[in-house]
Image (cartoon, rainbow, N blue to C red; front, top):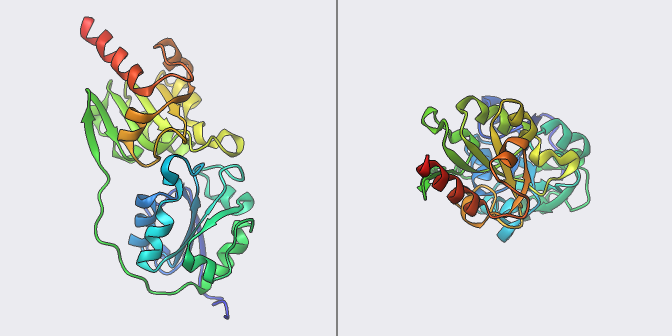
Length: 267
């Protein structure tokens, strides 16, 4: 099948907000490949998308968007967490190695083990146009006094000083999204840590601003699901501010939240 030369390949650190140029393009987006991120790529009209598999993780949440994209008619693949930093589109393009491909991507010749940059060229021939997805919202919930936000982009000024469990990875762009709101404790998914510990690079940056932050293991909680971060998460990394609050690797995210809430009630 001929590969259209006029289909652009665009690179982004996140797919939560894409420009009009993404419509009809092949997008290498360094978001996880869970359902909501796949929805965003489809919503913005991407011809095809390559995301990060986020360590695949609990219930294979990190690549759950691939089957969803197939149903919409959008080719989609994911790169292995060990091959490139999540949240860094340029790194996905430069070093990413495909770990999973949906049926439509496979029909274009995309296979596991292939460099992402080569897969992107093949995806120029992906079917187009595809079905525009019905509206899907990310959620914010309050559970045991903690805010559970499916994305780090959902924080609001009222979260200042509160415990916020996000479904997002802890890459540098998550630091930029959350630090201005100054929560009392932030929780992320470690996305399998991955290349250069990309899944937790936000934690030391947040510590420099005196914001406590932890990550939970991708195998313990579903990425993209803030409630799972809080209720299922096993702590895999902590920054020095969270350590002072009692956070420890191997501990329960929910137990930590409960302990901090109890301490706050006693003060």
